[in-house]
Length: 260
Image (cartoon, one colour):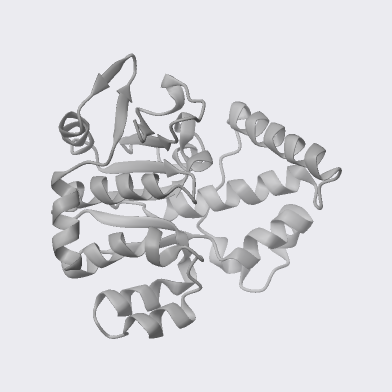
């Protein structure tokens, strides 16, 4: 039954309008253009059910040849568990017990992982282990240097030159801080933790053709993870927004306004 549902979704796009610059395009036209690049980023709001439908639709239409699925939602240190599940060496309960899945994993992301499992595709646990990001958010880069197993980052470089991304992040943190009356941590260190996540996620797909599912802040305006890619990497971005959400054409190569 699961395979049948995936197949039907691959043929029938969810409701929404696809904007490509000043034009609107069909789902077939979008998929055709996405097929031309090795890396596709899909930026989402994590609790948006329609965004997850669009992600499944795009993934099932691009999942061929050597394409992998990359997920912000799993951290690099559970890759072995994820590989074990894909290979049938772990059942679902065993996998979920140890892989620290997000609360909405089953409804939001498991259908994509299951499609990969059923079709012999790889899935990449892309995100930095959360204790490293938390260390940087609390103590800055110095905290990372003092962290146990910090040799994990020996081959990770962080590009911090995108001032627009920095200002956007700090502006968001300031707005949140005003709502909370105070920020629990230094916003600059939180930005460094954000950069660390972006750099590790970019490193996790080095040399790999993939569809990358991430929070929209990590790929909107071709910033975030894309900033940390090698210059020669060719990619396109998709941003999925709700019907009543504000959006801009330059937000992504394709902006899908759901539910219309």
